[in-house]
Image (cartoon, rainbow, N blue to C red; front, side, top):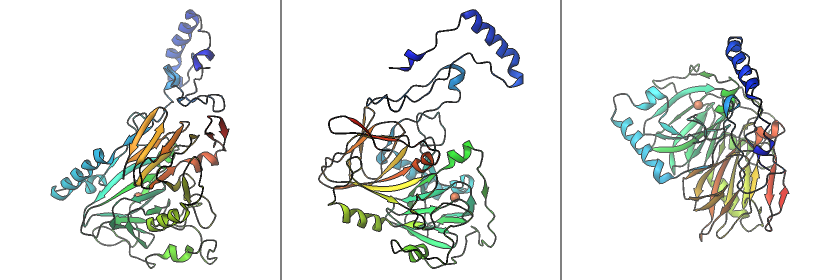
Length: 400
Ligand SMILES: [Fe+2]
């Protein structure tokens, strides 16, 4: 049954015209006399289970508050030349972009969100490039952020005095309220993906930023290292054992992971060690990156994971009320989303918004690894997380 079947019988035109006239008259009072029914942009979760169901946007006054992200695929071979162009401008310009824009990056703008600087309803994603010698000065802010490292090596983030050297596949966290600075002290440009819960905080008008770190010195206001490299690994490196003499939080944050540097090499070793397991019919071999102090997600707003789609593996369809951004860390394959097929390869990024069915296929002879960033923790915290799968026979089953 579609939404049109539920549409209310139109008001007599005279009544509607009278209401609209009153709306013009009353606009200065900041009220709106309802002349249109609510029009949910999503279809009923339990009833509408067809593979293509995406819901529909309203029209008129009700639509003003609606937006709907689209599934989209950013191909590395198409977008990465713009990183090179940014780097070229930065190295030849009198004032490099990092000076006037704070960053050298492009943001991934979801084509369904009207130019907003967000990849999904709750997530912002950017791809950044740092030339040798570049520094982003120490600062802190209310959004949670992370870097997913694409370059093989080079570059660093210093988080509250812990210097995290960046290598491909690493995920480095800057929990909200932590002082952090980034830079590249290597010999080649460094590239990474920034992921933030910025849109959530922007929606709540909670964005704030401090760029005046006490004690930060030098032209670039860099913070000094105050603990050895690998400090958070040293504290939390034994699974199931955590130190009880430290506060399990960084900066002023709550419920964010005190383990701030997830190593790509560790992720890969863990996946390799599990590739012989049955895994998950919807996800291949999935791993969640967790806060070692409480087993929860890295941020209350964003969950991070990595999954291996093994050579020849085809997952079953799944959908969630959460949205997920995928980064192709290794290999190639396809993801089918609501009637589209994304043919992905290394460094590609794609987004699967909530409610859309998707499945992954690896028709190659080599394993593929996808990293994921999802707003599922936030959706769970407000009591809205649901997930469904489809069996091989096409039967819809409730997963959560
Ligand atoms: Fe930052």
